[in-house]
Image (cartoon, rainbow, N blue to C red):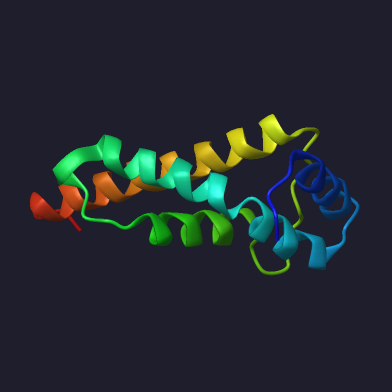
Length: 107
């Protein structure tokens, strides 16, 4: 599926209207850009994080689409990708905090 701005925008609108199939299609259409974002975030963390971009992407998808949860409403591509970036970044922060807590023997 080609990744065009118009296609992503159409899928964003359909997903916001409650079309669950559009959510999966949206992630497929935006996959290349999302993967690039995740790769940059993981690389920024350096050697301290032993994660793959795929895990970060999957975690972001699960956090954005909880079972029985309400689909977020996005007004634009920028807002959509910004929201995904923020969710992936927060996952890395949570991961680092957990790792440090375990290193210090905390429960």
